[in-house]
Amino acid sequence: MQIIYTAHLHAQFEWMPHIFTQIRQLRESPSLLLDLGGVSSPENWVCQATENRAAYIILDAMGYHVAYADGLTTSAIIGLQPQVQVRLLDNSIFYRWTWREWSLNVGPTAPAPSVTWAIESSNYQPQAGRLVLEPRANHLGLLRVQWPDMTILKSSYIPFDLSTPPDPTITAAIEFVEREARFYEQKQRGDSPHES
Image (tube, rainbow, N blue to C red):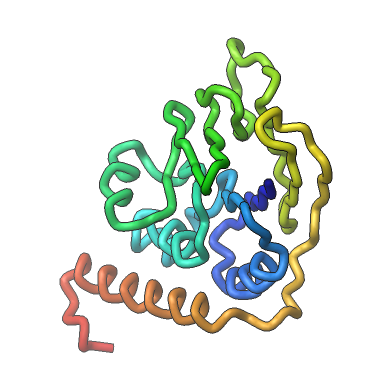
């Protein structure tokens, strides 16, 4: 089983089409793709206009299975979840990802076999069959693990390569989200969407 993960993308939307090309080149079956948080940014105007929803819509377009939605409130997660296939999690819930005969739980409260991100908790104890992923900014994390005991067979960090060709479908998805963010922003201000 392969696990590919990112973190701390901070709404670098211009990077995402290049990152997706890298992900496509690395992906094998079965492969779990997840984001460990920090995908949105309070300074980014698209995130501001969409209350951080835009970043998760792009992760959904990129085919992520799970995202730690630390940029959304619980009510925002509940509101957005029906609109996307990526499973949006906070620290209190977990998700069971399955692919054919493989299954893996994702999230801090998940029973083994599971994968999660680090959380601040005095009750948290490492357990057999549970992997806590360590994100590295500007890198893809890549793990090959033995299922179901979750023994790590290979672990590496691959720097983002922004010289890879951008994936045109992700570029188009970002352009769409930016247009929708402008429209929503104008609507909130009471402007006509056709005014410049």
